[in-house]
Image (cartoon, rainbow, N blue to C red; front, side, top):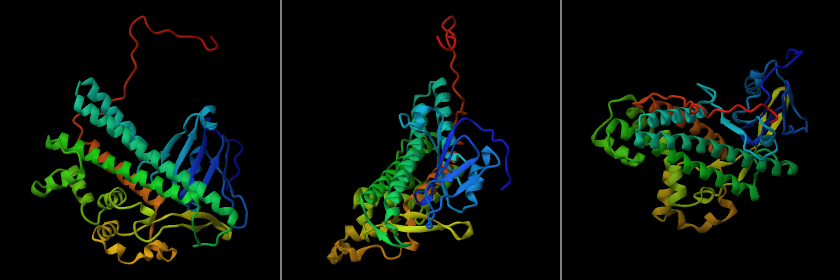
Length: 362
């Protein structure tokens, strides 16, 4: 990489969350340090040509980027105040979900100005929920980081299964994401129903039942319907949520789930340790097997021999959450386009004679 004489950027610390629990830290200079040592004990350091080159340089390592914490103040850096967190999108706008959180708050502002209480409430809830889902991804990523840190001293070999106190925390954080993600899904359906259908339908199930008799003709309705069909991403997301809520904890709904050691290949033959938290395939089939009693026909499900076998073909909880977050952000953008009110940024307007300017230091 070319040498740089100076590095000019905003006064902010950035900590990039990587797949598998890794972290990359950038202070207010041109250096980026991977906090996890390689399998040979080396600490990788990158040098940036510009402030904006952080993500493109990390992308060259081929370790997926989940999101980034921005620390703007001392209180944020010391942990007294939460950082600004954003989920990173692979395609489209880099900060798609954060943009959608802002956009819905701007639609809420327009509805408030127009005294439209229903639209104001719906937009407010959507703005809150997309941010809540983003934060759930961060919580899951932090659980991964703890899981990774707990495994490093033990020098587990690649693909080794292990279980400790952090493993259950990871799966519980993933379950929280599933629940909040499906709340966001239903809020989007509710907004669509109120604006396009002029009906009070507050769930994806209710909307899909309506579509069976009244197929949608508009783009947003068709996108919702296709996404929620069997085998599609929104249907699968709901199946995972239903499995957790109505059947069993995810880590023991089918084959017993354990943390798995994985390695991301790096340049020059190095490898970056990481962890994978596999999630079961076919959540709908698992729920059906538990409901009809087939799962309980053999009590060997309670033994270690029931551990997940096909780890390679199982989705990873963090990467799956990251993907769903991007898909929800894109769906949110499609639904926002049908808003009868354009988003407007609120402007604070002090009453005449009430504005007081106090010099710094007083």
